[in-house]
Amino acid sequence: MTYPDTQLFIDGRWRPASGGATLPVLNPATGAEIGRVACASRDDLDAALAAAQRGFAVWRDMLPVARGKIMRQAAALLRERAADIAHVLTQEQGKPLAEAKAETLAAADSIEWFADEGLRVYGRLVPSRRDQAIRQTVVRDPLGPVAAFTPWNFPINQLVLKLGPALAAGCSVIAKAAEETPAAPAALVAALADAGLPAGVLGLVYGNPGEISNYLIAHPVVRKVTFTGSTAVGKQLAALAGAHMKRVTMELGGHAPVIVCEDADLDLAVQSAGFAKFRNAGQVCISPTRFLVHESVVQPFSDALARYAAGVKVGNGLEAHTEMGPLANPRRLTAMAELVDDALQQGAQLLAGGKRMGDSGNFWAPTVLAEVPLTARVFNEEPFGPIASIRSFTDLQEAITEANRLPFGLAGYGFTESLKHADLLSRKVEVGMMWLNMPASTSPELPFGGLKDSGYGSEGGPEALDAYLSVRSVVVRNH
Image 1: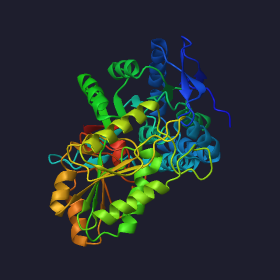
Image 2: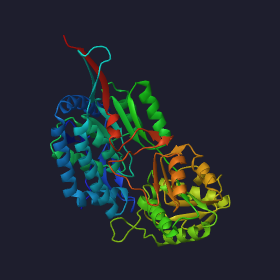
Image 3: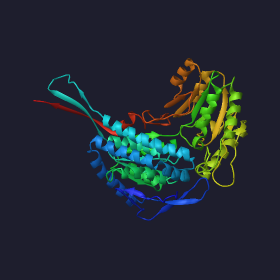
């Protein structure tokens, strides 16, 4: 399938940037330019804002059942188009076709679930403590137009986590997606538009990230900001939103601990954690990164994980049997090399990988480091790549303390056959999402979000809608 150029979507139609500016889109597996993406000017942003304001007036007044019907139709269109969308996604992002198709189908499931959840946005009646003639009502209303900022690692998934609850709640959205991966989010927007979404309810723009975020967040039309990305950028945007009293949801960086107890099923731990570690070349915010393994099993676990890493089939995501594609850009190759070199200089042992693969494309060998000191950068900075770092522990409380040492608190993993250990891990590890004896398994029904510097607010479950709703009290005394 030919890779398409991507335009802006404003007020119900696709259009080039008003100034004609574009940026190249590169295939990370080859480094070749495969298309162009339009870059929004200030005039384009003003047009998108005006359209979002008009679209909100229409969408908020539609019955939830009517909004849900459009969303379910969009989900059906995504399923019909999944194979073609996956091909586009793999070309621009690099992940294997199977993962790209799974991401598209998961987006359809998410839209469908939120379509139904929108029917359950209820208010409530509160009995008066003064007079039976007083009727006290709590009302939940759509908050207003939303500015949504999404990254390149899951171009469809990260956008649908914002669109699903926002549209279900009755809000309009201006989405600013990643310039590196523009066509996949455009395909998601196209499915919603083709399903009958009214003009202005959803806009899609690309361009200079700093300029667009600063303008949209400060603009009075925007009433809610949602961002997925690095902690550093998230803090800047949250501060800007706070200065303008905007509601904010932040899904930021992680550095997920994996605690392998002495009684763990090692085969299960290696297969589960290995799959989760090297999925999407480790470019996953909930990817396991810090492996804390009991001293009695650290050697067999390390050897087995190294064998797993060496067996991962790395290549172009469009090719059959590829299990791990390239990193997003050459900068990630440099980052991986610096993290590995720093760890080795500080005494870590290289068990697998540790180097670039080939001379073209952004391929990095699945890497396993053992005996990594706590001072190594890779144990303190999110690698966001295919590097697994291992160190041992003696006592479970020691491992929990290390898991909680960093300011991140997005995801965590544990492997144990002890109910006591499982209970302790589930209660004491400070993360927003914890998986025990399994890889990460997300679903629309569950909250998705972190603690501490990993952000606040949820992008899953019924809780996700709360951020897109205002709550009001209406009290009437009947004569």
